[in-house]
Image 1 (spheres, helix red, strand yellow):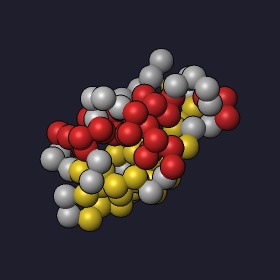
Image 2 (tube, rainbow, N blue to C red):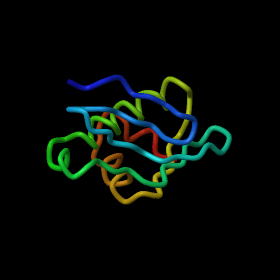
Image 3 (spheres, helix red, strand yellow):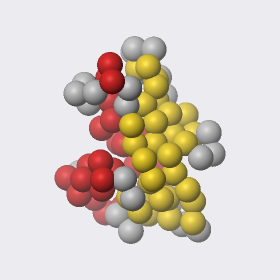
Image 4 (cartoon, one colour):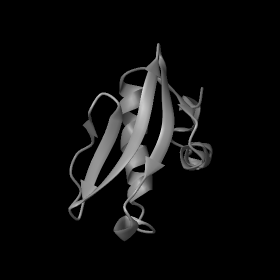
Length: 89
């Protein structure tokens, strides 16, 4: 079972199957800078990082933020996302 997205103030976290995927970030005005996205080995290949990114992007949209993906995974995910591509800064 997936738990709701948690924002610690410097990291987004999402728990699935007792494992935590996360995205480290910084805020710069209306920009959300995603430095690193990672899922535990047990969740890799399950779509966990994609679900985390979708929740993170939805939160950014709700807050009126644009996303600056430093992390290669975050950048690739946003470019491929039809729903959230417009959030790329």
